[in-house]
Length: 231
Image 1 (cartoon, rainbow, N blue to C red):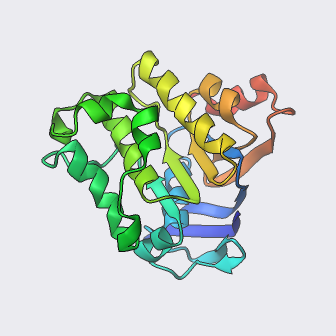
Image 2 (cartoon, one colour):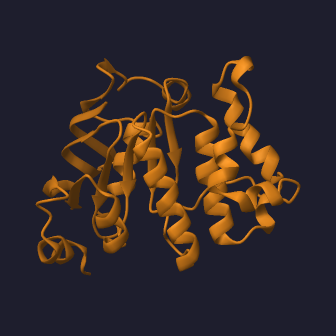
């Protein structure tokens, strides 16, 4: 279980997060929403260890991981699918997937069969360079690379951004599959409301570095959430 408690984060003198708290549990999708520039990606960077926090703490399965480096958190099962995908364009699909081996013991260094069951196009393109894939295929590759690490916490930063509708459906099915396994806590950052509502078990909305609205899927009021998403 992920438990973020009253986290503050600064970039120089600019404060990006102000007392942010959020929880993600195995077998559930916690969805984080908000306009551009409100602190969503900064929160993910704090959770994955890519940016140090100045106050508050990040706990994973009861352990305080606030001071751990990103690679140390990855070895504990924290995996990230960043905005912009960040695949290696000159490496093949196979090689991109195998970069996930770095956090695994040698005996576990194999690509799970479920990767190709969820994203069969990747199995057909193992020898193709990552930079030659379409944007949607690169997003599938980024999710698959995270799956290779055998994550216990998966954070996804706007996986539908700039993706064609058919692949958005594939990504939604993959997230639902991983949730329903009951072993992985999922934190999904998303601006596409319908996609978020369909997957979310709980939700939180950010504005100006704070959580301004939160609740369960059942008590989510569309008009109120959309009000915080409108530019």
